[in-house]
Image (cartoon, rainbow, N blue to C red; front, side, top):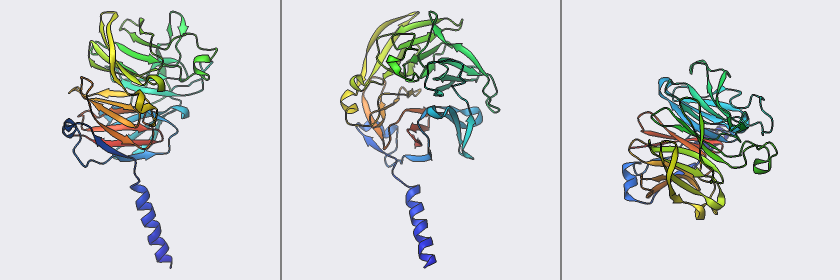
Amino acid sequence: MKTYYFLLLLVLLACESKKEVGSIEKTDEGLDAIIKPGTAVELLAEGFVWSEGPVWVESEKMLLFSDVPKNNIYKWTEKDGLSEYLTPSGYTQIEEGNAGEGSNGLLLNASGQLVICQHGDRRMASMESPLNNPSANFKTLAATFEGKRFNSPNDAAYNTKGELFFTDPPYGLSDQDNDKAKEIKFNGVYRLDRQGVVSLLVDSLTRPNGIAFINDSTFIVANSDKDKAKWYEYSIRQDSIISGKVFYDATTSAQTEKGLPDGLKISSKGIVFATGPGGVWIFDVNGKLLGKIKTTMASANCALDAEEKTLYITSHNNLLRVQLQ
């Protein structure tokens, strides 16, 4: 009898380890060149409150990502699996008027430093410690615009000139748009130039979130608003936006599926991987939908490895992986 229950336990554990976390949905034949038919969505780790902002660090062969409410950055490697990397990650209690949330978007600058969108401290900052010896030693890169504190920087991207572009929705504020601590009345998209000057680029989006570059003059911004669940494409010349248009409108899907347009990454071949309603939406550079990685939980962001052969997905309380062609 003991043997029976032991075998039953093994079966249950095996089922749990193979639980359904996602699937691939093809919309266009072009998806086959990106994801091989039959590819599985893998569960790498779970148990987070809200996983976000992943970045692949090739020098350390590791993935870093945020658990925003826990004020923590985690590390995942193929060799050692999951471990805590840095806490506090974005809330060091230097500012008032926030929900105590930590880091969100993560990226690397040209020098290989970790750059952090810090929700709680309402700033863009860099970690001044080495990547292989992390500590909560932060340098402020940008914290204000025209003397007013940012809301809660969410996601960011560098262009090849080393200029930092970032979004600033109110998600890190305790009461979001109605919070008395909200000093900037709009939710903006900004650029930090190499001289440290902050410029406002877009102030018309309700919830600017993920941001990524198609090329140095064109970028995409996700709008995480259920009623305006869209990705927007902007072209920039010198200091100004010269054109803007809807890259793709997912508002209808946002009414019935979990998640909103959030983090995104664009491969060197111009393939757009954008978290949105139902999972990760995959587009070509012209906004043609090729397919989706359907996830069982709302997905917040994604990251490519250095060879663009693996896509990592932060999906609510899960960390997922999909192998690419």
